[in-house]
Each structure stands twice: as structure tokens, then as C-alpha cells.
Image (cartoon, rainbow, N blue to C red):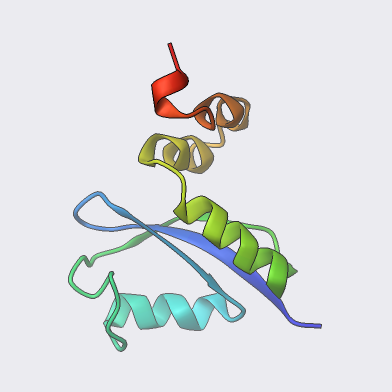
Length: 97
């Protein structure tokens, strides 16, 4: 069974890049050297700020898609391990008071 990791990189412009890969070390090398064209190529240097536990690949892909849909402040809470804040940050912006 294939497994993978979800990861978040912080780019030099302060933005976040979320990805999924089964060989995390190789993918981080590709990002850091700019071997492949991607969102991160022009935003180096990069910092790895969060990595999931090892997941079955379909679960990793689903988590990546979920995180990519989050607003910046929710990603920051995840990176800072503020897990108790995540549910409140899931509420639609227009509904929060």
C-alpha cells in the first residue's frame, strides 16, 4: 500500500505552499533547487513549516485538498499547533462575530 505525507512550505514572500508526496525528502530537494517549475520556483528560499504523519496516499491527497481550501489564518494555526483554534476558524468569515 502506498503512503504519503502532506507538507506546508513557507515561501520567501510569506505565502504558503501545500503539497503531498510519498518521497518527501526528494520533493523538498526539487523545491529548494528549482528543478521543476512550480509555484515555489520564484519564491525561494523556502522553509518546511509543517508535515503530517505518514498517511495512506488517498488520505494524504484528501488532506492536501482540504488544507489548500483553508484561509491563511487557519493554516497559521495548524503550523503553530493551535489545534483548539481550528474549529472556530472553520466558520465562514461572514458568519463570525
